[in-house]
Image 1 (cartoon, rainbow, N blue to C red):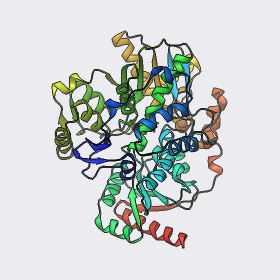
Image 2: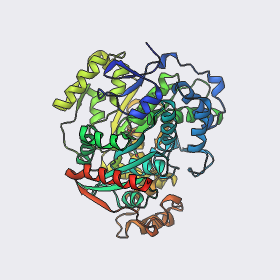
Image 3: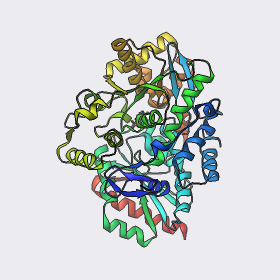
Length: 501
Ligand SMILES: *Cc1c(COP(=O)(O)O)cnc(C)c1O
């Protein structure tokens, strides 16, 4: 088989890395997966002491089969070493008592989505060159809060690409909304939808499959693409920090060569933890990947029973980026564990679409031993934030707190004392109200005042991107009904055409 990316639902679809990045989703609805993972071999000796950028270079070079070295190193430099991140290295690994927190939130929007969405625009621009695409791209995104801002920030002012983000008008936090509305860049558009996140995501899917829309775009020489977490251009950058944190621990003498470690990952769409799984497949010594869910514990139930069932109540929680009942990237794990049996994956995904549920075989479940799954409810999440702060003066956001609580349960249940990294996905300031009130009790200050209050009371500092957010001007004000989203896209298209005249 030709070295490239196949669809999880059909081996007949085989594309280059660039084509996969531009298309996002395979034409049969499947997700792109590399068919050459087994051929990749890293020499561990050569990974020791590498910077984040050097590590990214090794990993991207292995996966981006039609990119040049120059394209890869320019993308890494532009994303991670041009002042978008707070510190010299984009991620930080902090030891707190018996565990390590891998902080992935020091980028421009204070959530881990920045790790991939700062580099995706570079990868897309180079992909267009690699496939000799003369068209313009419009990125269409539905967001429950974090992805929207990270994508806007990444694509703002990128030539030949425009981006429109839809968010549920009353479904995101004050800070998340303000972050999006203050976005600058003539190629950006933000629209609040009168509906919930499912309506919004559904609206986007309808537009992507609408042939009338595609024809209208084609007349303007524009094609749609997506920046959501199923794009391989978002998955690959996430593999890097698993390697980087392992070798950082080795360099610091916290672990011995070949010693196994655990990762705990606060999980929603299963993208982040899947990148950890790929790291393990590439030979990184991982003992357990611990999948942490909030009250929407569809994945915990799946790993316990082998049944995936989305027919259940949906809870709005303090960790909203994990309020998800369909974890899209799980499809890639099923594909890999079933030895690339695309027919069976296709059947399971049809069952999910039609019945909202599927059951995988015993044989497949026996191969999920690398995973452990657990859940934290709202009270437990809040208690975790408070107790870690009281004991160690370390502030966790609610998503990270879910992971921390699930790890406590795991240790109690298994007695496993393997060194463990908690993947820390958002700045506590992004969810300041939940964090503040968990520690200090209810507070009637507004959400902006709460940022400074949290800083004062905890002796930490408000991250720059969130500071003075309330003083920034809004640049977007569009709202639409959930049935009018395609009109918003056409208005934006029109506006872009005239802007380019
Ligand atoms: C997106 C997100 C998650 C979930 O990550 P997945 O890759 O969707 O599993 C967890 N925490 C935060 C803060 C996020 O923004």
